[in-house]
Image 1 (cartoon, rainbow, N blue to C red):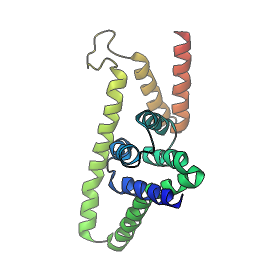
Image 2 (tube, one colour):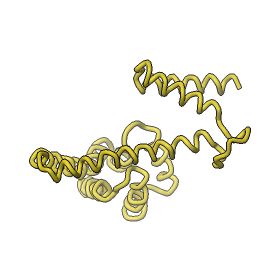
Image 3 (tube, one colour):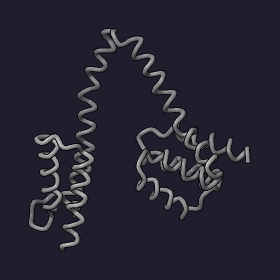
Length: 189
């Protein structure tokens, strides 16, 4: 069993160290480790893993590590796999924080940060547009013809924007309210 724990830790350490780009980018690496290399999951089980990892709160790779670790080695396996997947990020962020604190007053560091701020804003904007467009145009075609626009989504978006910006309602309350509104709308229609 100790060998299994070591394999779990090393497999998810590799996933944590080399899965750049978020949870979806990590899926092929997770698949290669848990199906191809170690055979801990079948392809059907991996599909369940992806579904459960998306449904539960938290990063997909961490949820996957907990799921696979628990399946293979029980609660200790879940803890070991989760530690393996988060350890590279913890080390990386710690080193970055140290370097930032040490060199934050350098002119070049301020230049890099001033360059990165608008870049981060642009990345967030693009991600928002990538989420908003398929929601507003569910048929996949950006057309303002009748039937191509989901008007309810636009109403939710505008209401959420007003609630957050004008009335300072917290985002969790806004998301819950929009979810409840959609459930009621689905029930009525």
